[in-house]
View 1 (cartoon, rainbow, N blue to C red):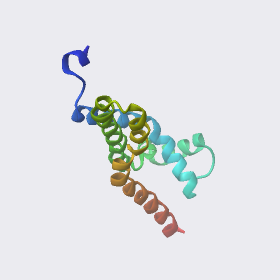
View 2 (view 1 turned 45 degrees about the vertical axis):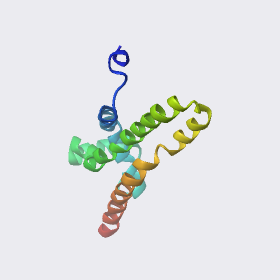
View 3 (view 1 turned 135 degrees about the vertical axis):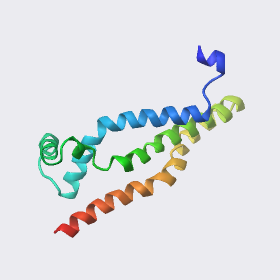
Length: 137
C-alpha cells in the first residue's frame, strides 16, 4: 500500500530504518559479544552463562553492555550497506534491464562504503581492550 502511494521509501528513511533495526538487534546480541570478547582477551574464563553471571555480580547489568557506545556507531554500517544496495538496485538494476550482470556486482560491492568508514573504529576498540589487559599484567 505504501509503495503504491509513495513509490517506495527514500534513502533517508532507509538509513533510519536500517539504523533502528541494527540498534534493536544490538541490545540482544551485545551481552554475548561482551562475553565472547572477555573470553578471547583472557579477562574471564568459562562459558557464556558463567561470564554473564560474573559480570552481573561485579558490575551489574551495565557490565553486559560494556562498549555499547562504540557499537551504536557501528550500527551505521549495516544501515549504510543496505541503503546503498537498495539505491543501486533501484536506480541501476531495475531501470537498465541488465539484471543478470548488475545483481552479483551490487551484492558483492555493497559492504565497501560502510566498512571502509566504520571498520577502523571497531578494530581500534578491540586493540584498546587488549592493551588494557596487557597493562594490568
